[in-house]
Length: 155
Image (cartoon, rainbow, N blue to C red; front, side, top):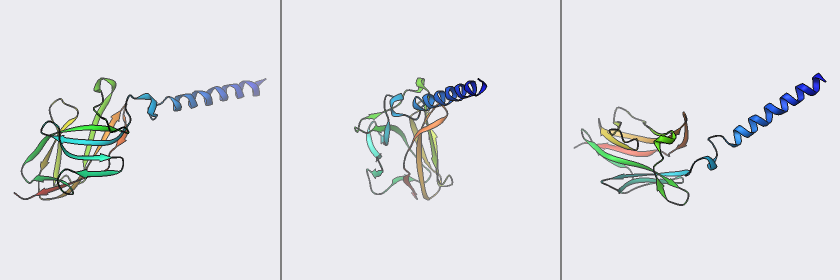
């Protein structure tokens, strides 16, 4: 009788864990949009750079260029779906943007005001850097972009 109770309890725990994994945040079915890329725009929609699937491309050359001592932006960060549609997630559903630079000496990234999806690039010193973007949800990243190349050039 005791073996049956332990087996039943273990089965219940295993089934509960399995269901929570299926309905957890990592599935495509729990969000309206599943990003596969990132679109960076400036000047009200002018393409600066984008990542589609595994390919990163730039509007001008092989990188985003920032002049030393200046700020580039505001830059709007949008995500791209598998169908090629662009979207910005809803912050009221717990989504936020996280970003990082590989070389903080050359480049700083700054969020603009209260708009979660708008940043500026600050050219601190000549050099190279990469930037990556994370779509955060409920304390973890739902999507991480490929690195975008940035060149900080002298005036």
